[in-house]
Length: 414
Image 1 (tube, rainbow, N blue to C red):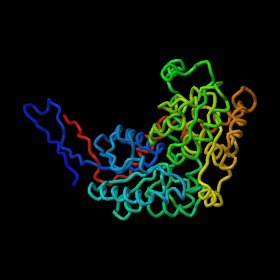
Image 2 (spheres, one colour; image 1 turned 180 degrees about the vertical axis):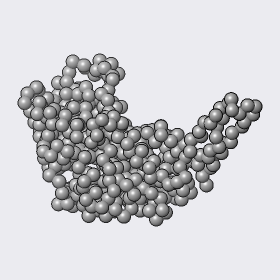
Image 3 (cartoon, one colour; image 1 turned 135 degrees about the vertical axis):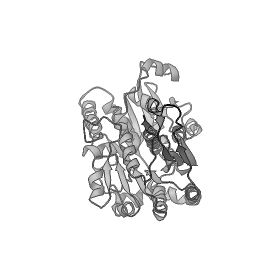
């Protein structure tokens, strides 16, 4: 049962001449928050921080990683344990995921949250939303599933189980509202991220890089299966450049650094801890499809998008794709801004060829930079005068759905 804290004024002497707290009651609020991968975990940490600035008394528990724990979330399930990708890959992990799901729901039954926030990871989180609906708990979907890309019929899941969807891409609000889902575009959290403050020379010293060379950032994905499918070809492409460049590979928080080290040692690739400075100081990137493509766009780093899944996953999924592009940057722009090398087209020679087009100054690089700038602008919230971070807009939308009674801050009298 939630605790109640009662503030009672202790008035002595001349009450008219002193300040005292009026009687108030604060009822602690609990929010279940579930984010199952690196990007969602980052958004979850931002949202928790924004909510705590507005309502410091809120308690959080659920699914997340180190960033969310640092923000103040009690993680019942670690996001790393849910980091799988693809139809066939999910099937092979179902028993473990099923167990983690029931651990979370059992904890929800024990703690009785007032509201739930689920972030991305639809294979796991729509089931969480369904269980919350059964229990009468309002649920917000922050970073709604990309049902517009494939399996559009699954929008029914949001209509049935979600109280409100907070979307981060501008075209999603209309898509979901047209299909009966209460949706609001709050802006993309990455659109407002400042440029890294670390100087190139300092960053180079930290990781023993040559600041005089061009740097290329390698981002093979944030899940183990993605890394195993994408990284070998990325490494092969890097090796074809020889020692002419410095190659940086940011370690996603959902990955074990040892896995990346084993695949990159003695290959001229440096593991780093933060993607944004690496992208900011890089001349170009090789980036797996996903949130990392948006990170590269907001850092204004030209890149080649790559991606590969298992042959069976591709064969089953490709006919269901409803959009003309794989890269989010291209979808937002409505045309190809960055090259896409997917499945059989994703070969080391193809990666090298496309990189060689965008590394030197010239029309190809200039056109890509112009396209990335337009994409970054479209990711911002629609009201140009609203300087709030998207996480702050999302936090206000979440608080608006909390059931009464709401936390009450003691008011001063006298």
